[in-house]
Length: 171
Image 1: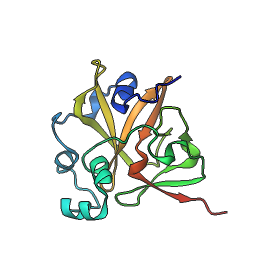
Image 2: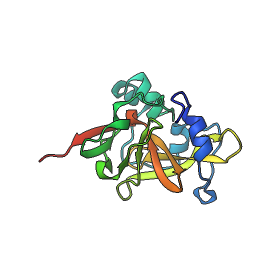
Image 3: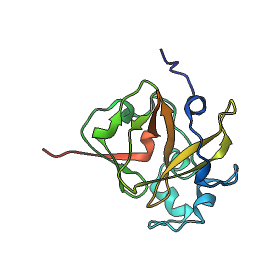
């Protein structure tokens, strides 16, 4: 049985896959600093982001934070529909690609084509020396979504529910 108090950082540290072809950034660089080199379609000042997001949403989407396991209802939801970026409403994931795992975050097999970009996580190497984490972000606004991880030999998107909004299927 999975420890319900396992931190996401420890979880990712035990399952992360390395990828040397993604380029590198300073381990101390935040989302905004890393994103400065890339021109996103949706750009907002820090003040504009803070106006539209709660403190917790800002911490996760703009500072690359992580929500506690099982803290967002999306992790165990089986509703049919589409998950969008909370920062710009870009459709990122469909519910048919979702995998409900006991770890307590939202997992998907893949995203919509060209919806998610990856990077080396700015927080540096994972505990235990397993290498850097691969961060997943919205390609339209650069908002941090979560990480790309390997679980039972499957590569999955491990996403913060806080980073998403949900539009149910109609019909």
